[in-house]
Length: 525
Ligand code: GLU
Image 1 (tube, rainbow, N blue to C red):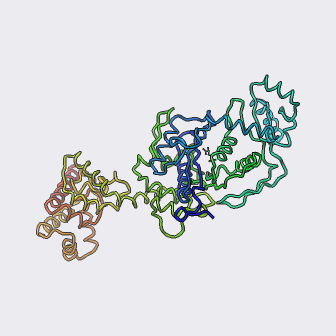
Image 2: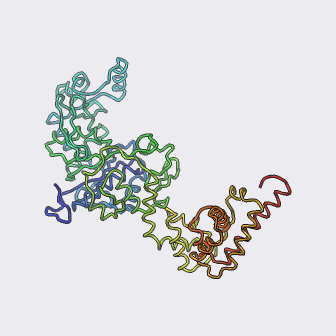
């Protein structure tokens, strides 16, 4: 068992890495992988490293790297080492580490663990098709490699000649069949793979670039990575990586594969390529597509707090046990354990994400206050801080984001300029006028205009509950313009007698006007 940093004896044993490919913005799954790596490193006083895995130049998307760095910063989970942070293993870009890969590749070739293969893509395509037409699957493996155009079937002289004349070749890893490879995943437990089912994966291409598998394995070893924490989609690569470590004479790191994040509509996993019809954002920050120039908003732009986002993300696949759901980053570090990560996919729920944001709103009263100030200033209005604080206190539970505050509190400052149309149509008759008239007279006679007193008198005066509720609805629409909002008597107290009476008057005028139009045209109002 590892030692928690608080009682650490060994120092800095843990080294983990986040190793994204710069193929676009990070999605929820990507940033969650970074977070779990960060939490694990910090828990054990270890190092969290950022490596950019840019071996596949065809899939390179400009701005991905700066996006990744900015996201980690926004989430307050910055690396200790790596791209943008320096360290003993620069460069942390795989495209710049080819010299290192060549050293180990040479060793693999010399020791018979790898070989040159000369089929072009076109030839392989034809081969695949031939097999497919015969109802078979083509796999470049132990069964077939001796029939293919590769260095295993050549003399050294032939190979040299070929290498000198041939422009295109690849280097493949030679997998020995007939082994039941036993592996261990820290989340899933034992995994056994029969090497008969593995093919001889390409490690290096003649364009001078290593493939992901080779670069990833070498870098993890050379950079001293102790734990590989990454997405479930990499489980199929684990056997190849373990065999590569073995061939190179290295002890592999420990592996932990994280569950997928699933769409709640049952349409599979969340990914950059699977965003059609999604009703929630999947990117932490706004992403501007360099080709289409389309802007896709992220959690930051939509008003989520980074603490809430990180808290929500941490619990998306990790179960801390117990009822506690709100965790600061410090607490997450303390409680985090790979053992409590789910094995199966987790459904993403935007309502839960919003709930998390709401929980953090209570700690943001200052920010809400200055937001409200700005909204008022924009409308040339002014209000005492005490009054604003009360408004915030009354409405905070009704909002999830700071920017929602005005929409949910404007009626404390200005009269509504529109009313719920459906409800207006329903109450468009003379009785409404009488009821509003009653309210006017009733309120005019009250000097102690407090919520407690108003409620008490109201209940005393209108005994029948149904009638009372009806009148309260009329009052609510007069004051707020809608049938929603906090406690009516609190609204009355906040707005005050004079303005409340004014708004009742406005509503009476509105209803009278509608009744007149109705009379004139004799249609429904
Ligand atoms: N470069 C891989 C990715 O973008 C990371 C794989 C790994 O962590 O080993 O998902």
